[in-house]
Amino acid sequence: MTPLELKNALHDGGPVLGTLIVSPSPFWPKIIGDCGLDFVFIDTEHIALDRSQVSWMCRTYAAMGLPPLVRTGSPSPYEATMVLDDGAAGVVAPYIEEVDQVKKLRGASKLRPLKGKRLEEALEGQLPDQLADYILGFNENNLLIVNIESAPAVENLDRILDVPGIDSVLIGPHDLSTNLGLPEKYDDPKFLKKVETIFTKARARGVGAGIHAWGDISSQTRFVEMGANLIIHKADVIFFKECMRTELAEIRESLGIKSTGDMAGDLNI
Image (cartoon, rainbow, N blue to C red; front, side):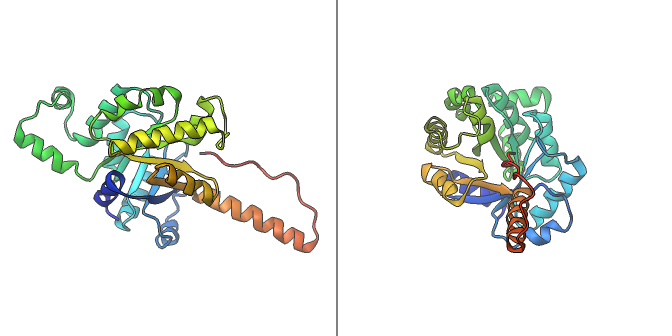
């Protein structure tokens, strides 16, 4: 899938399915390549990856036809520009609550390489036709995705979606549930109602609606039925943990060995 195909799917179709890649190992693309993914998600907000590692990962996965979506450490437009320069197909901006944040991110991702006063003019719609055509072509493949992770973000969602250039919203379930006072209560009706509201409003505007989910298959299906068309399914480290924990327990059981103790809780990213 190309970045443009991914963008079109978010606006007009889907669902598209990806996963979080934590490991920067050069062996990993060989494993990931034939798993049936539409894209990969790389998180620099919660995962310790340096810029050269992120760039290597982006360019490798992009060359494999897996557009890399990179979440920046903050909603900074400067960080957004850097990850796009480093090969990301799209920027995922964390914890967006205000319209002004999105406008600045639009400038960083959709109006590159404009800066300064010229960028301010462009954000106000003041661009000569020749430059406007160039900017449109220059940024055609760039995606802008905003994390909606709090009650204020949901309250401001209509105004946020008024900003042109957003390709998808993305729910961070852990942060959203915690902000709502329902930490990790992912089946709580109040939480699910907020999720459905976000999906419904985004899709009504022709904007993608996504969630990073680490539950079972039925929960992923439920999110799609609620309106999601972008699913980030778990993470490489979660698949490793679940498989390792399960199979080691099965080996011990088959050998009659007593369990080593309580299992660790779920991993939330």
